[in-house]
Amino acid sequence: MRLAREALSMDSVLAATALRVTINRRRKVVRLAFLGPFSQGRQGAHWYAAHHALARLLSAAANATVHAYVYDADEGEEVIAYGNGRRVGGEKVVYEDAELPCPLEELDDEAFARLQSRWPMGHLAYVFGLTRDELLRIPQAPLARVLPLEGTAAVSEADAMAALEALLLGPALPRAATDAG
Image 1 (tube, one colour):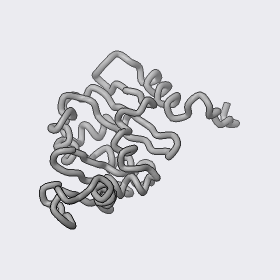
Image 2: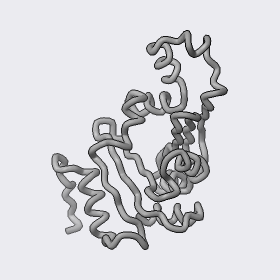
Image 3: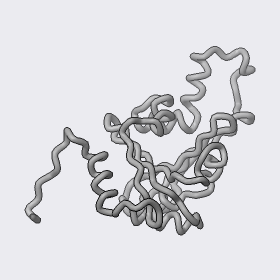
């Protein structure tokens, strides 16, 4: 929660409403997305293209690679990778500029799907062990929680953390026992 608030202040967002956490347990993929008027629809895709503070901070704090992505079904897609707080890779495709092996009308669905699998979202899906369609459907996954951020809905941080823990651990996975009491 603290990282999300820091990222919003770094990205100069005045009032985010919440952070939506969605997971795919089978592949251990967690998606974080800000929910607010600035992040909805096509305008939201463009907002995400310019705001990566959460990905940078999380990559440094977790000592892991974090991927930020932008997907606009009409315009294009981009994936940016961050490691240790720095950009370490990325790729972008603007659909109208994409190199096709033949005119679009001549591509059948199977050939077009193979082509898309090499584009940024297809490659990221492969890295995660998902299909492109599975990756693009993660925002609608049933395993999700909306966590209000500071200054929004009256939910305590403890309640938000409990909701996040329930989402990540789930009912089937026991909590690790510790000697700390």
